[in-house]
Length: 464
Image (cartoon, rainbow, N blue to C red; front, top):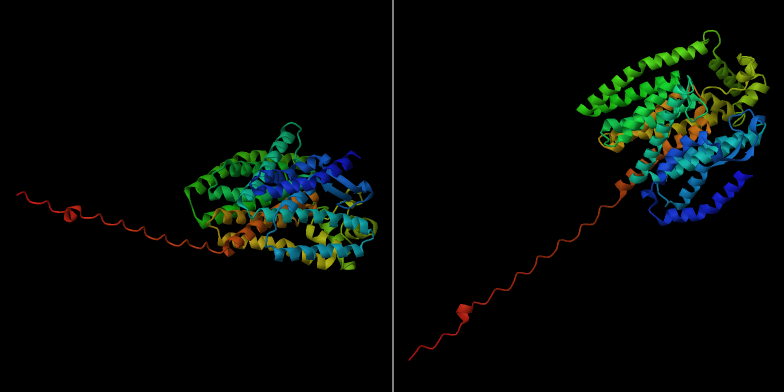
């Protein structure tokens, strides 16, 4: 009841807040630091969530209700307070295409209301994406948002260090529910900041965020997170070195190598403790492969999908887990296929998978292509870092489903919004008419010549 009251108060303050944003120079304000920081606080602060409808444990899917968070309220206020900007029409069509596929999947769902839970969650993430894209055509808003995301990663570093040293947790998760979620979203902050560090960023933000990201990845003790973090950093360093080699890049590479060498014993010790507690049994039973077989059986029988947010419901109750050889334990039967592409295909069908892939591919291709063409500028390096971040999380998502979780969708939406905002800002600057040159000032008139007083002086009469 208290949360509902808080929601009504927030909605009542929404219009005045939006008018204040519109009346002032919103892009020069530090509110974008808060926008970038909040997604890292939200998982550890359930007080910032308001459940309008909640099925709780009564529904086995990934999303179990209709929620509104403080991020959503802030995004609406920012949307109302922003001037409209051109650009992003192509991606907007892809966004609508995927949304249409998800909405249509409700027609295939046994529980359309449960499917609508994911539709609502995706719309909230799309709203944040639009707001960020409009804002990040402005350099000040862009810098403030990146600062907020860097603060979020620093917060995660503090949490994982505390969890490891004080609590003895082997696979730390920071403020997030699971270490795999933390490992995946870290890519979207670590790689852009590492690219800016190599490009010569003078602020301490890039260095601190890069170091914090490495610490976070190591302490998650996640094989996939560590693998893709290493690949991404190596790729960014190689691209930056090929673009232009400097002494600074050599020193950064040397320093980074020494840091990784110093952390190697901690990495080895972490994985030893992990596998001591949970030995690998993938040669006997590969649960990920079993989940994927279950999703493949569902897609074969239901090419239009079974409805968003319905994978576990179908696999568990209609024999697909049995056919796929999923272990007959509640924890396994209630788990989700650890592959976001198989999950999307099973729930939204072939059409949904195509729309989802196109929606992911557009910002990736745009960031890498434009970033490479403009790699001589800091914006080009930032786009390359964001592109590598997207590439790594899309590869990582072949082993995880968390990309469509609420927490990951918020941070992914911000990263895509930054890319689209930077591109629309560049287009606007390119299309802006050249300033009309002012006419040259007329030369000042020459001063009138002084009269020849000597020549004009009347002759004196000669003395008689």
